[in-house]
Length: 312
Image (cartoon, rainbow, N blue to C red; front, side, top):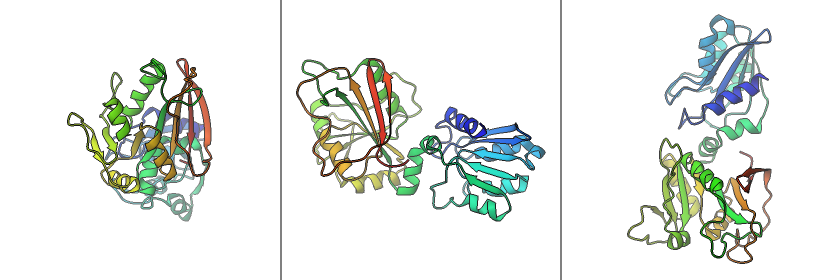
């Protein structure tokens, strides 16, 4: 149960450590939690060190449950591995490995120091920092394709402005609020002149608003034009610190991203409507794509389908 508690701590503090990952930690001795910790705002202590400092002498001989493998390198803070060994922790259980090539290997360093260290690989742990994990390991943003569709797979409804209901539209604004960038294609720019900002929801910072395509953008548009190849543009965005990209483009742009293997997660808001015609959810793909970890949930009168194109 202590790893579950560490995951709860990290989830409650989502985004606090941005652009660093958020890590939760719990120290257990004699079957009782003796201290908890979560990563502090950027430049502060990692979750493991917060818990160790709170535990003091009670950390010696204890088990540390942590949502991600403790770091083994010196960045803005000293290695968490060194602090764990110095505190006399006997056992470490991590919810997932660290994908950062510079910081990975912490569990191996702990084992070399005589600590019983293991990984209890959890999808929930990997999902908590999925944007950062892709950014640091693949050198591009984590890309989520979001689309609203009818039950017959169409993205428009004749005579209606919206496909889905108000609750789904609010959820989209919440997604924008936690994304580093939001993007559409030039077809959507021409048809809808979208703003792509997060409105009427809490937002720490507005996302960058992008348009992929040849352009030119309309004179009144506030979007950034990205006219290079998709992979090239994603690499450039990553170098500029963009860890997550919410793709809201139409079927043409979405199909291009999928064909290039550049979509990580799919969010389909399905309305209880049969359109009977109009543009489809996607264009033709050269081959089928297998989806992973498919889940469904109600959002107002709509159903949200969520799935991954690769392991987070």
